[in-house]
Length: 209
Image 1 (cartoon, rainbow, N blue to C red):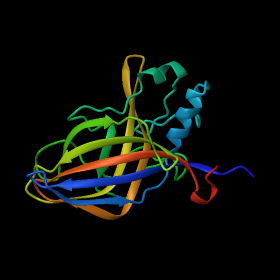
Image 2: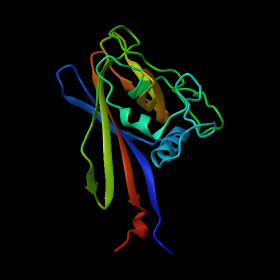
Image 3: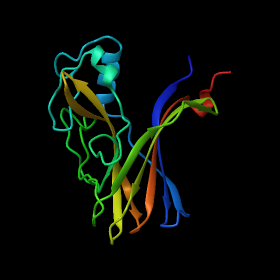
């Protein structure tokens, strides 16, 4: 029987104080990728998302017809201040779904860009080079968020959104959404860096020789 391989996500964070000193780091257990992720891969393989349930669902809950050529506009590299795609974070809760529990299309209660209380300053979303570690292939996306308000904020969910430009209009699709069992607190004045690592690898007991 051939060894089993899996595509999974690793979600990690680092919190630094006003002076840039690392005060906390950790890893949160997340769920897998959304149905939109599979839909977009299907389109990448040459099948047009011409009818639901094969069409991806944008963040407003509407199916959008996407062609293979549209994927040439795809990006998660949201610039500073953009809170519609790239890595985004929220307070947590039960996110909306379309067809079933895997079909999450946005966060339950998202934080938005700003420097007031209960907002976060969204910096650029960056994509690192492909790397290999212990036979695992990793692609890492990361983003800094600064709490410029006067009160602490608690992050209870995270998402990764992709932007596609179709017919001159921008559409946003979440390909990863995860709610945390325990919220992560970000003190006033602190900056948190989130890392979402797409990992492809074999189970430890089944790594091929």
